[in-house]
Image 1 (spheres, rainbow, N blue to C red):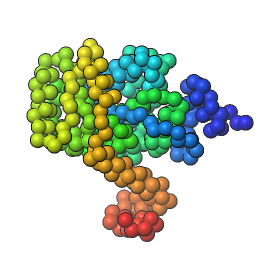
Image 2 (cartoon, rainbow, N blue to C red):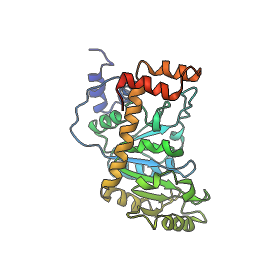
Image 3 (cartoon, helix red, strand yellow):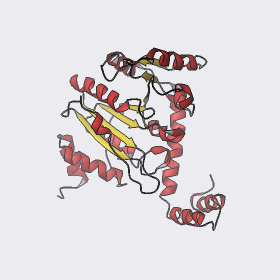
Amino acid sequence: MELNSIFSLFANAKHGDRRSLAKLLTKIENGEEIDIPTTKAAWVLGVTGPPGAGKSTLIDRLASYWSENRQRVAILAVDPSSPISGGALLGDRARMVHSNPAQVFFRSISARGNHGGIPNGLEHMIQTLSELGWDRIIIETVGVGQGEFAVISVADRILLVDGPDRGDVLQAEKAGILEIADLIACNKSDLPGSLAAMKSIEDGLSYSENPPAVIGVSSLTGDGIENLIHRIETMEPDLAKSTARAKISLECSMISRIRKSPLYDDVVNDISKNKITSKEGAERLEEYYGRL
């Protein structure tokens, strides 16, 4: 049997072989169809927030807590990619220093220019990790702009990370992420201005019908981490937010399918050369897919 066959990679990964796990996820990321049995629902936490809010360091604290309590944690950090080269920095691993490597698996993933920042096969990666015995799966996204937070549509609980040193907190989040966050962690509570930042967020949410809780934490000192984890693990599903996430997920999946069309590159090329308009390009794709 070929050593790199799906069956052998899955079997080896189930027995703890990290190299086989990495190869298996790479195959999924590259678009290979893998038939993995679905026997249970994955536990997934989506973490988003602006650059500099301390997401990676906070995730490291969460992973450390869970791993110390004999839970296996898989982290998929999605980095935005260049629209020209398709490359990404993939540098979040450098900020994660507390986690127990024996209980924590980390992988950086490039969004590869996909709509909404959702990489190819991300949902399939999540389910595969769950079937391989990973108890907690964390998806981190950079959270820049309205489209970039779409990656959290694959998660069933959403944590928004913000901080006191970013100026007008609510102005920066007007794009809509506050509407689908289940919890807001105001990080860097050890810094001056943290209480004012928390009050600013709470005041801005005061008119919402069902506002998410705002919790002060410090990923540097560890203050508030256990309280945050308790809130994450006991949160109740919100049907309205689940519907919003489902809409985002469906739209992103449809865009990804369109990009795989054999006509897509030709249409993009004709638009770039001003041979046709974007509307005409959409109509040409509709002839292939059917009118939407």
